[in-house]
Length: 393
Image 1 (cartoon, rainbow, N blue to C red):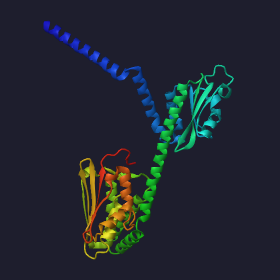
Image 2 (image 1 turned 30 degrees about the horizontal axis):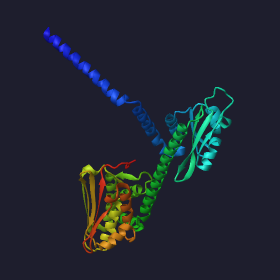
Image 3 (image 1 turned 90 degrees about the horizontal axis):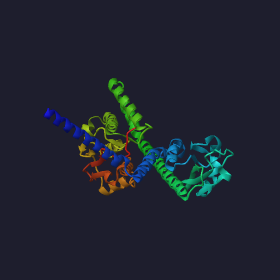
Image 4 (image 1 turned 60 degrees about the vertical axis):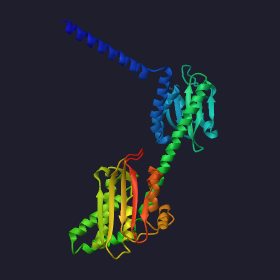
């Protein structure tokens, strides 16, 4: 009996301790002080509004406006672009929403904050909760793009006016980042278009010529090469995604080299050494094919002997290490530097690839070129396995 009693007391003590510990943790981490709760709430709501606003004012207004009203705690909030009401959240939409653009006209025109009273805002309904408005301009890079208007029933305090201005500044900052995202996407697309334009017409002509040469002697091989050519061009001219996986990029390189081997026959020897661990790594679209094309064009075409290309992709801790090496004619280091900076214009896309790697991953991840006259060329890059903002779609 004593043993049973002892065990029961022990269980009771453990259970009581667990309850007290749970209460303590919750009171410290979840409840906290009123100031902690308010800070958490503000951070939480701004976190909810941020991704919606990063889609742009017109695209994100409808979803973001509810979170903005939560931040301000007013009966209603409106977002306008200067000519149209984009979104309204709260009471009074049936009466006041149609006037939101006119309420914000002065703020949008002057880039200022305007407080409106009952003479402008109020309606005949004595029970209406909307009698005053604070409207603040939204800007991106000094361009007026719209206004945030908060509606309230009481005369707005200086604190509320300041809060509306701060929320408008937050919205403006997110809209500016959205503009930068769009500009970056347009720049990336322009760079990819430039690479596509530089895909050698001679390569296309020579590939089709090589395929035609097999039509009678080896029709099955001609069919395989034609499929490789179709897949290569489909991949190179696809319209979606700034990034791809290393596996997809290497597969496109294999197709390209298969076509070049059909053209050069036994003169072109290719070695690929790839670690499976790095195949899922995200890389900029068309970052390898231009480098391999350079190896063929400038490293092998002028050499009547046997050309060799070695492509290595291996695990290097937090990075993937990739290199393309040829045994061709090489070049002066000064000329290699000119090609990297885009001044030489001699190597297809070398500067383009270098610039994209640096803009995405940082300057330490640019191309490294090792070369000398008669010693061939080796181009290397290091790509982080994980990088914020880099996603394959």
